[in-house]
Image 1 (cartoon, one colour):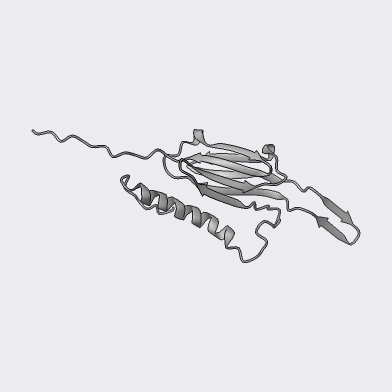
Image 2 (cartoon, rainbow, N blue to C red):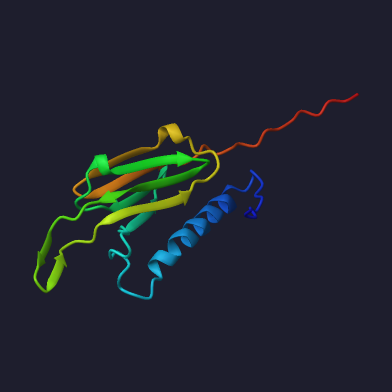
Length: 153
């Protein structure tokens, strides 16, 4: 079970900071890889490069998926977690006596990202163009404080 820090609704900046820290933690191990083989085919796994950008009204996740068609990609949201998964098939493979050469890494991939509370999963959009998957996640509506009237007895 994970500990989750409670942030009062009156502090949206802290909530956004917490989300940014979580994103940094999730993607940190990917970018801090000590080897240059981050996107290599390791045990049948292809690891696409991913950018996460915050815009005024949305978060945008961009993943480099060259050679992957929209039929080979799944974008799902379950329990406030966005998961991008799929498979890239080998484009060129050559086998001759004494060697085996593959031009591009291939295999299955999966990346998950915890979404901030209040994101409407029905409004998430995804499209793939020129080998780049773009997933648009609208920011949740800011919660305005509710003032309760105090009556006299």
